[in-house]
Image (cartoon, rainbow, N blue to C red; front, top):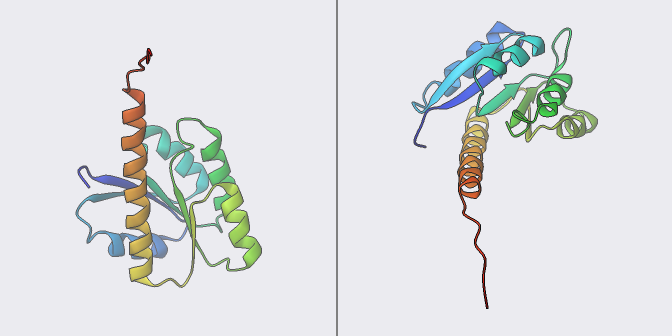
Length: 146
């Protein structure tokens, strides 16, 4: 990856944020920011658009599903991938996460290597998506004459 990729970690538990930050700080091409609630996450992305959001589901006031739905409502943020990391492990919970707009769903407790691999995969996909959008944006339409 060429540029530093920005990850927003959203969790109301500081211990979870610290654990994820420790796990991801080994990747030199990643910068991290944090929000302790869905409401703070919505405010945060207005100032600095992340390349990926790691979102807990169980939070007070606005849960992760609701936060994800709010993010996806705004055209400028709808393409930001949201990866849920949560203790909600039922099949219905996973389905609700995908319906809310999540791109992946990791159940706690998670395997560190698996989480890291999924995060890096989502960042690579996001980079390819942005590159494709740039190519399409600057593509010059042409007319074929036979």
